[in-house]
Length: 298
Ligand SMILES: O=C(O)CCC(=O)C(=O)O
Ligand SMILES: [Fe+2]
Image (cartoon, rainbow, N blue to C red; front, side, top):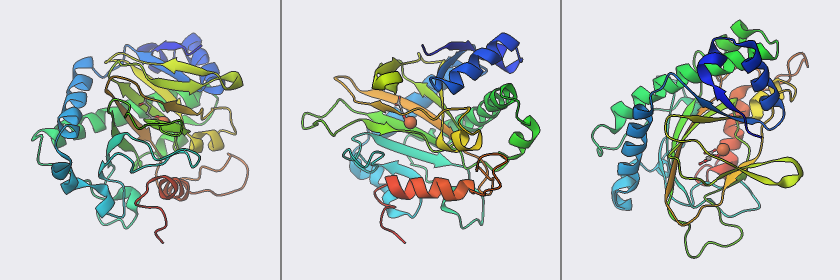
C-alpha cells in the first residue's frame, strides 16, 4: 500500500522505480525510502541531540521559546500548535529551525535560536539540515521529472528554500487526553515535500481510501516521504497532499521532518492557470492559523 523505494535507484532515474514513485505520489501520497545518501548514524545523532534538549526542564527550554518571537524558530511547548481546528492543540513538543536570510524581514527567513545545552546541538542540527536539504532537492527533482515537469525550473525555485527542520517529541500519551487530543492531529503538510525521519517507534497514520487509517513507519536510516499543499496545487493534484496524524501511545516517540518549501516568491498556483499564489503567502497563512503564538496577531 505504501511503497518502499530504493532511493539510489530513484535518484539514478531507474524508469520502473520513477514510475512506482509517480503512482505513489498520485495515489496514496506516501512512500518510504531506503538505501539513501544519509547514513543511519547521522540520524541517530540528530534524534539524540533533540532528545537531550526535549528532556531538559521546561524552565531551561523557555530560553529559546518561539512564543517570545514573531516567527517559528526554537522550542514550541506542548499545546503550542493546533493543526486541526476541530481538535485540541497537539500535546507534542517541537523544535523548529530554518533557512536564514540575513536582513530579510520575512518571518519565514528569521534567524534561528539555538539552545546552550546540549552543546553540540547547533552543529549537529545545522549539518543535518544541509544534508536533508540536498537530498530532498534530489528526491523532488526525480519526482517532478517523473510527471514530465521542467526539472531545471523546479530546482531554481529552491535556492533560498523556506525549508523548516523540526524535531517532534511525543511524550507518552497523557492520562488526561481525550478524543480531541493528539500527538499531532489530522493535517496535511503545507509545503512541497516532507522528508521524515522516525525513531522506529510506530504511531504515524495516513488516511487511506474510505477514511481508513494506515500505519506508516521507518526504522532509523530510512525515511517516510509525503507531499504538501503547495505541491498539490502546483501540480494540479497529480501529486497528492494526504492527511495524516499521530494519536500517541504508551511509549515516548520522536520524529524529524524536513519540510522542503520553495523560495518565498515562487508561484505555486496551478501551472498554466495564469494565477499567482506566492509560496510565502500560503506558508505564512498556514503558520498563522496553526501556531498559537501567531494566531490573532496582525
Ligand atoms: O511524527 C510523525 O510521524 C508525523 C509528524 C508530522 O506529520 C508533522 O510533523 O507534520
Ligand atoms: Fe505532517
